Length: 411
Image (cartoon, rainbow, N blue to C red; front, side):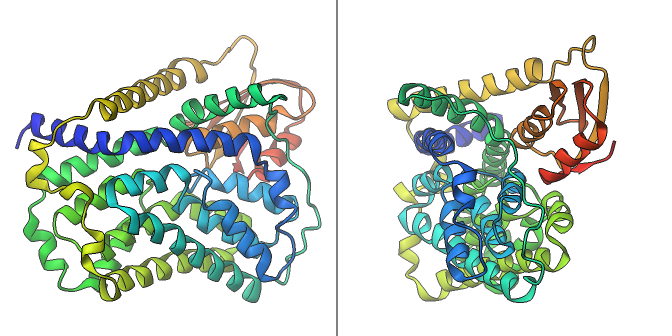
């Protein structure tokens, strides 16, 4: 067990995922350009089951993480979406996405790729309907406004260019960090963790699933980043159902998103949200282990831990991995040395904002504040939560814009 073995395992897993991840990023860009939140919100008002189902169907293909989905959900809520539909969107969106569905198929096979969005749909439906039933008394949005949206260029070719830019730049920056973390954790589990640890847990599936929930819910990991971790757990002997709990519970919630959701949706809706995620993940995990044939969930290509060192690298997969690696490096450099570069001579007002956890959150805060009259330039720093504003805009308007986006303005 040495560094070369860890690196080799990491590269094998990366090669399995990279073609599908790149395809998912491209589709994510197309969704971003051609499907607008303002168009979605028109279908999400009302307290019946239809808005709840529509919200889930809208959210399932969108590649947003559990923190990145919050500003979008708050935006939908303020544009008239019901509480139930908003909750449905919050549950379905971070658990899946076109990129994670494609990557799930590449590493875990077709049954997982099908069951994952089905479980997200079921959990979001029951969660949304429960909110309508038990927390819908103040569902009328009296102060609904239309938040500023990103400008999408006109013309088909310009939209395609913007889709590529968003998918391969913004989306890579948004999930890249967590994807790399997931790959590294998977490689470390594969190489270092003894099989015997998980074999004992497999004898008590419900206990193992509860333990997995206790670990997965507090941590922050995106839907795509959870896939290699789930695969490595299966390689070590855990059942497919237990791995499925990691796939669903890990991306859906974390402490930061729960705190923000508690403030924007209320305590009861937040409890229903978390309960729906946990119950659905465990219910589908048990169904996978108890009702479905185990051979359906054999890892594609017979990937096993002891075979990792004997896997070969295909030319196409390797080229895709190199391209994905280059995009990740570019996103890191851009965020580190360009996006966070503050022009101190011009920007003379700083504010503290809580709740920003990814580049999508950063972009949302900057866009909301930038739409205020009198603001010339905005820069949000993810590491510190400091937002620096150039211009003479009123602080109350800035605070209202930040709070409207689902974040907490400290001042």
